[in-house]
Image (tube, rainbow, N blue to C red):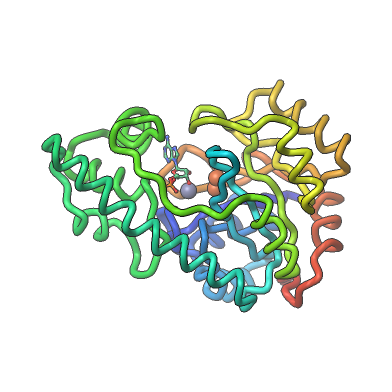
Length: 283
Ligand code: AMP
Ligand code: ZN
Ligand code: FE
Ligand code: FE
C-alpha cells in the first residue's frame, strides 16, 4: 500500500490541475493520495471525479497557513466538512489577504525595477486559485529574471527578504479547534522545515497536542533524518499519528509523488478520528 497524504494542484500553487494530479498519483503507483491545497477545497470535486475513474483512493484535505508567536505553521486538515461556516469564513479571509499581499510584494519589487506586474502574476494562476509566492516566482521565471521557483525563493521571495509581506493567518491553536469542529483531523505539516523560516519549539507542539492536534508529518523531504526522529519521538510522547508525504507541487518543485509515504495503520487512525460526513473516497 502506497499512501501519500500531501499534494497540491493549481487550485493553489501546484502546477497541475486536480484531475491531472490524480492521473499522476495513479501513474506513480499510489493506492491513496490526499489533495491538500493551501487554504481551499476548490479542487476536491474534479479530483474526486477523476480518482473514481482510476483505481485510486482520495483523501480530501487542505493545508491551512497558520501562525503562532510570529512563526508560520502549516496545518493539514483531513476529511473536514467543507460547508462548516466558521471554516469557510477563515479560509475566505486568508485567500483575500493573500491576494492583496501579493500586490504589495509586487509593488515593492517594482521600486527596485524588478520587471513584473500583478497582471503577470495573475496570468500564472488559475481563476480563483489561492495565490502564493510561487505565482510571483512563475512570473519571474517567464520574464527571465530567475531560472526557476527555487532560485526565486532563495533570495527575492524568501520570508526574511526585503520584498516579503505577510498575509493574514489564523492562530494555530484556533485552527486546530476549527478543523476539529469541522469534523476533520488536524496534522502538523513539516514541523522542522527550517529552510523556509523560523520553526516552533517542541513545547509549542506539546501545546498544539493539548489543543487537539492528531498527527505530525515526520517524513518529508525538508527534514533531515534527525528531524524525522525528533518528530517520531514527539509523536510517541504525545500519542500523535506519524505521517509521511511528498508535498507534491507538479513541476514547481522537485518533490515526486510517493517519495515519502504514510503507513496504512496511520491512515486507518486518521479515518477513525474524523467525525464529519466526508469519508475516504475508495474506488
Ligand atoms: P506562500 O504560501 O505565499 O507563503 O508561499 C509558500 C509556498 O511556496 C509553499 O507552499 C511552498 O511549497 C512554496 N515554496 C517554498 N519554497 C520553495 C522553493 N524553494 N521552491 C518552490 N516552491 C517553494
Ligand atoms: Zn505550496
Ligand atoms: Fe506547507
Ligand atoms: Fe504543502
